[in-house]
Length: 496
Image 1 (tube, rainbow, N blue to C red):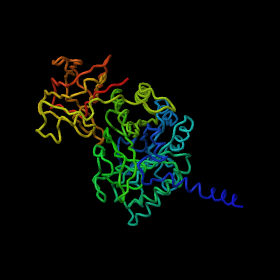
Image 2: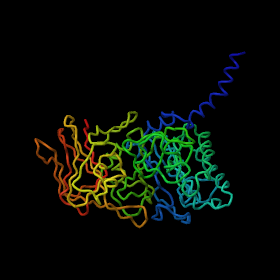
Image 3: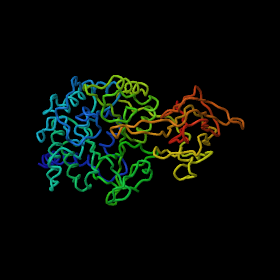
Image 4: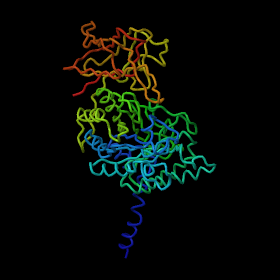
């Protein structure tokens, strides 16, 4: 009798315990959901919807549903590209801020079912993920610029609407490994009733990781977002959106020494960071009619290493165009990246080499406005992608001491570029300042050039040497620039 009681009790209690185990609790190490997230590590972001057909990044919910008309919609191709590129999961934008839904929702007519092309895109992508062995994740905007109840005095009516839609997404399409919420800035954090939404997600998908964009703030109760470069001290910053399983600050890049402990109500929680990047050099999320070049493969490779380091994750946006297919030149680029990296199914993601220059003191021939705090030389080696050294002159030297006993065979320079926004308000176009330069090492008390270029540096310059060097000092010698040169990060690396 006792054994029967114990067995019955296990059937009753175990599922509940399993569900609770997936919810965030105070901890200083990852739980199972977070470990699985870190294990997959690398996903393909897909922005596609009514915006694609109106040349917009954000729209206000007034684009007619009849404008959505891909003539060669091929969701299988999307996921096939993802598989061939080595991605482990696909993150699909199911509803952006405009409110247009990529599935047949019972709760709105602003969806694919009411459009000229009625394919349930969420189902098609989910099915393709199962077919090709990838995990499936969804993006859902909290902010909805189309749905009328969003404007009601009783915001609870919209919470009900949102909960109903999330229930559709999380019950009709199989396993969902991640839910990525966006648009929270339009309301106060408490208005979203996130504990209820989080519990709903966990009840329907117990192993699903949940994140809300702009997760962390500098001070509890305030709305000044904490940039990823600030997140280098444990237990200093607090949740803005709680609960959640991972941090987001799209599209910023985390510090090389990213920390994982964040506070809520005085208790510490472990939170990894998920990065977002665009394959497009113009940094656009929704595809435009005009063909746009992709980021250089060197830049994509180094950003991959950076963003998947420190137990963080990365999604790369590869958006389909108005035909409903991913463009060949973008597919080729992301597949080439996967092959260069050597990503293999079931194996850990590849890593970069050892950083010799990280946190090294640095010295510059000049500093812009003599402001060491904002533009000092040490900011080129601090490990942060939002901080930078900037010179005061168009010719300049940046010198970095190294351990002379340690070899290096690669240099990676992330240059600060002048940018100009496109007509959509989001796309940006970068112009290099550094036009010619040399990399020099100290040898027998003299400076010897090991690399010389008379071409613009590029957004991310990678220099690979055929054999290792050792030196006590290395320097960037800028001999020509269109404006005072500026560098986010100067990395000296040894990679086997």
